[in-house]
Amino acid sequence: MIEGISRSRIPAPLTTVVRSLLRKLSMHGKVNHFPDLRVGRGAIIGSTHGLSIGRGVAIGPRTVVQVNGVIGDFALIGMHVQIIGREDHEMTEIGVPMARSTWIGDRAARPRDSVDIGRDVWIGASSVILGGIAIGQGSVVGAGSVVTRDIPEYSIVVGNPARVIGRRFENEADRMRHTAILDERLLNSVESAKPL
Image (cartoon, rainbow, N blue to C red; front, side, top):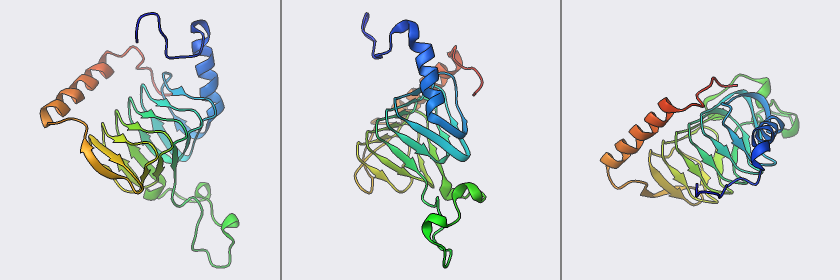
């Protein structure tokens, strides 16, 4: 941060109260998170079987996260992102209208109900992440991308469906150094309280 300039529109004395209120308004279902989770206005975050959100995560305004799984430490999720399941309603029930078919919350969890978003991932605005995929640590998902399959660590992906167009770091040494520094940040963090 540049001295004297804050990225937040929230007045400093109210920051803790407003951020706590935004988190409470956005959450439903089985979601575990740390107190430093930052949630934008109008975000919806929920899970039927369990979602774990790491330290230092920021979720943008009007983003919808309705999936089981894990969002890793330091993830940055832009505005209007949708992280959603693929099989929230049963499609194969003969004679049952889709609106009345078995809902995800009324059945056991399946692998395609979950996402695994690695540590230090940036998901650009208006992207769609479908259930059943893993986004590797340190990856960047370009704005407006639709992620339908796993993304390797430290990749840069764009498009519909998202495809790898580059790597975040030029070599393995830089990737390893970056990972080690993130590990150190977590160990030294004063905000390492237990998830809520």
